Image (cartoon, rainbow, N blue to C red):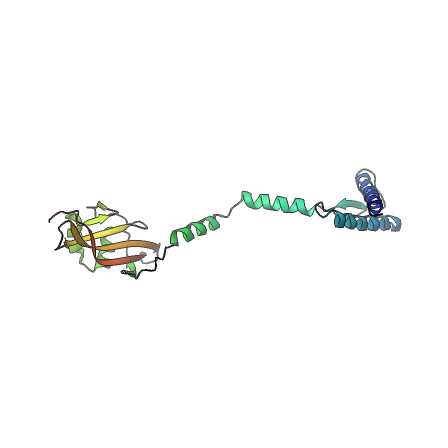
Length: 220
């Protein structure tokens, strides 16, 4: 009995579909009462077919200006929408994801032995940052750089015009460690992030005082 009803619904729906195809070539009076009744029955048959076959949704029959047409399949529309979203990825979304990845920090649960500060500098030059971070005068900072007492990412930098980058680790040599000449105390500055402002730059840093590192200057 169930299969017989399904067969009848398929026949009614196919008949309505033939009228739709025919209306593309021959004008039909689809606004007439008999035609509307036929299309109403066809729509009901389509709904019954949808219930019996949920994986294959059928379109809806519409009437407009003496013409019949079918609505697009919802599954087809969803598929096209997904393909369109996959083809176009917003640039802002990519940038936000990169920034979130960069800002992720691992919390090891140990007490922090550093201080976080927001430094305002006129530029990204190394001497400007050291002046704000260490509190030394411009002449002292310049002297440290020229004497090779400043390293950036474990490499000595003798140019005060070096532009700092995000995640740079800057060590300012202070003195040889008394108990071990192979070690030295330094002031370490880690550049966490920076942004441009109307007055110059705002640089967020982490500061360590008297950190023990390898004495790259030897006994001097």
